[in-house]
Length: 150
Image (cartoon, rainbow, N blue to C red; front, side):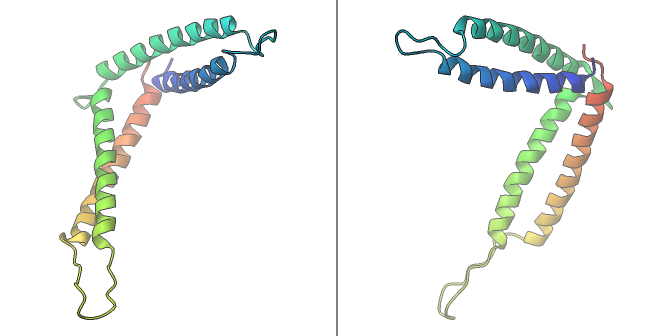
């Protein structure tokens, strides 16, 4: 099984778990004398099966990510880099949006608001980081589709 297939199955199992939680809650109580629309015991057995499969997949995905190397870095390290790039870019974009917005003055006597940073220069840095993020994400996707799950 390819890593990408395992990641897809993991996402599906996580979605099924979420739905199963709702179904369990919906069938946790009924009016006296009534029957639930689904038997909680069956749902609990399904929960056990899904959790067991999910645990196995997560362990194998993590093992694969930590052992698969590309140019001296593991997939785990590439994932960490991608996540940190995403966070940095988001914060920088919000900061630059704020720094570049203009405050309108009604009269010349009002206080003038100016940016504290060179917005254009920082935007170029964000563009470089965005390119690095795209390349990192493409590499991770490629590795996901070419790596066998351990």
